[in-house]
Amino acid sequence: AENMLWGGRFTQGLDPLMVQYNTSLPYDRVFWKQDIAGSIAFARANTNSGILTAQEFAEIERGFKQIAQEWQTNTFVAKENDEDIHTANERRLGEIIGKDIGGKLHTGRSRNEQIATDMRLWLRDELRLIESHLSDLIKVSIARAEKDIAYLMPGYTHLQKAQPVRWSHWILSHATAFASELERLREVIRRVNKSPLGTGALAGNCFNIDREAMAKELGFDGLLYNSMNAVADRDFAMETMQWGSSFMLKISRWAEDLIIYSSLEFGFVRLSDAYSTGSSLMPQKKNADSLELLRGKSGRAFGQMAGLMCTIKGLPTTYNKDLQESVEPMLDHVKTVSDSIQIATGVLSTLTVIPEKMIAALAPEMLATEIADYLVRKGVPFREGHHISGRVVALAENTNVPMDTLSLKQLQEVDARFDADVQACLDYERAVELKDAIGGTSKRAVLEQTAVLKNLL
Ligand code: ARG
Image (cartoon, rainbow, N blue to C red; front, side, top):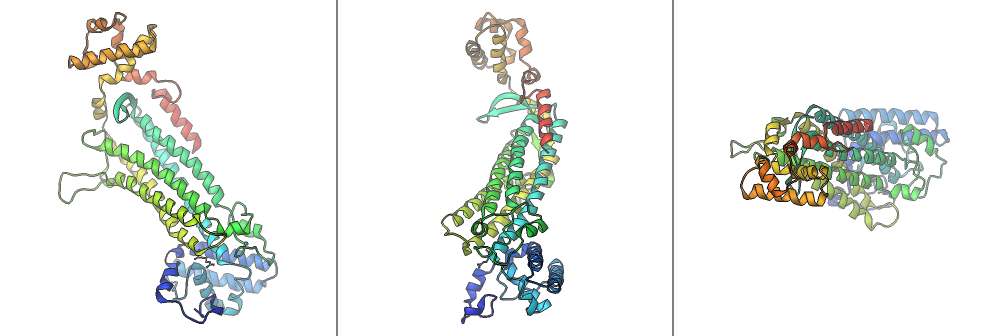
């Protein structure tokens, strides 16, 4: 270990398994760009406060340009003692520009602030991409809702046929939930994008570094104001995963609905081949694997969130190596969420809707509420109307005929207040169009919802 970057006080080498156990370079190398940008900003700030000469800064910048080139072209060669991205980059800098100048880069700096800076920068950019993917999902939902506005389907509670609704209304029920997630995500990004750089190992920087200038150079939106918190804080990763978990929960329910709707028994929708797979044994099979993976991967995303929270929960103030364990779950979580959003968008935009199957699944009993409402319009108290309508449903059930084929005479035997105009109530389109108050399933109310969502994008 004496030849490690921190090896001055060590006389013995690391156990070989310990080397592997300790190293984070295999995954934190994804931060190479952020790490270099942070180092250049740091060196520039140290130059402006007189710690480095302009000449030294130029050398450091030149070295990092080459290192960036090496990462970019996949020619960066990791060495055995490269523990993490920070030591790897600094070691290479020394090789390129010489240790005399390279050795000055780390003046007043700690890897504790570096890793926090790298993760936040990386996450900020990823979350901005996710924000645009999520907007796309909502846009595709809106477009589909507008195009398919004519289709009616059964709306369910308890997965029992409840009342007819527009298919578009179902789409927007989920899109509205996604829109809440979009708003939450924007909040999260605001807090992720704060700079820990210039806080040292925990106590702060003693070389008068200009933290504001560094934050500005790196595109941060303000500073973290307590150095001990700045190096200990993993809220940005935790909050991201809490957000991601909340989103995955939503997309999982969306997927579950579509799994049901795409089953042969329902047949409301058909998944595009691009998002389905077959069976190795049963030739007829076309499985909704994309949707099942959306449902399945949500469990994995929740696990990563819970794992990180357990890692952090009992830690003493401030930096502890446990925090390195926040990196991998965060990387995987973000990829899972990002991919999931794009898959969902693809599924929805390529889905075939089968409106005849939706109509065929509507049942006259779903209009029982319409009969109660009909009686209400004749002055019958709703409770009583509900009861009478229930007796009509029972009559149809007992005589084994669809409710809408009962004769006026039969209805009048249930209650004398039924008139010939009751027939008009037994119409799905009419039932749907009557739900015209804000948020309802009438054409007007549904299109109004798309307008509200568009405002958010
Ligand atoms: N690889 C470390 C991490 O991911 C960087 C910080 C190391 N700091 C330290 N004091 N050993 O957390």
